[in-house]
Image (tube, rainbow, N blue to C red; front, side):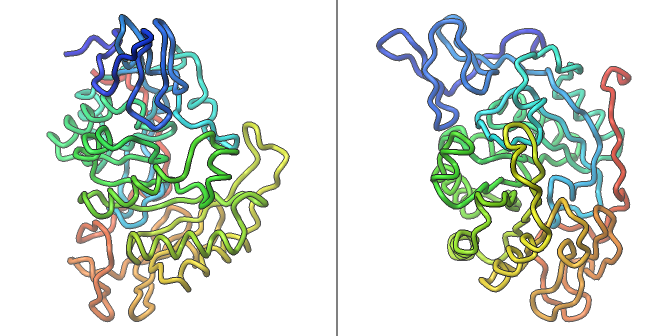
Length: 362
């Protein structure tokens, strides 16, 4: 087993003629001199190769409702064990997890845990899945893959919560081991991506098309709506039309409320009416499952049959109030299938949040 205090060897890099080494995991293509770290902070040039410095060192272990990822069509009502590492390969000025993603202190990663231990604890706690979240699993893909393999051996599924900013070859390897993904589609202009996140839109769109058409990964999308930045009707129209045309009508979209954080404290929170407008635009453009998030909105967070309008899954925040799916995931009223990954019965985890101290487990 890998020693959790060691740097972990990686595959996706190549040497440059000038003596530097280029990381090939994400489109940033960081070119590093000996001893340097990439923008993500946890991939570094050691001995003329790229290593992962956070393997087995994680933060924020917590059992959440799967709806918090957010995933509304993947094992609804079930508990999911969530964790992340330090670092991130984007530089979002509005980051909601900046204390983790922008951390330069791997020592803040309180819990050391092998993939096998994470899988064992998830199974012991009754979690149906494990989520790689808080920062982005793209940058700790080797650790995430090994954890997903260990989880699958115990019947526990794996979930990636990601910005989707990844190159083609590592993307193909990573998603072979992932059961569901929520991808942040942060906006629909390259101006926003470049100005606000320090990245670009097209690689994210490439990831979405790949996931939808070349994998069996269950896919949902999240857009954090920021007043004055990505809330224009024209942009939401263009985004949702693209989703239906390129990904199909069955990919759920979550429009979530911004709150002032990190380097964007001068912008106010998103009005609920803005989220309702985005949801309505999406549905008018053919998105069958559109949701609002980070606000209390029972209508906007419930799942409806796209054929007859029946409430299929009623939600009050993260608590399921109604379950009108039959054992095959069809509308109990009209028999129309609801897109998703469902068990015959709804989970009963509710809104609980259970912090997990990995040191308490053998």
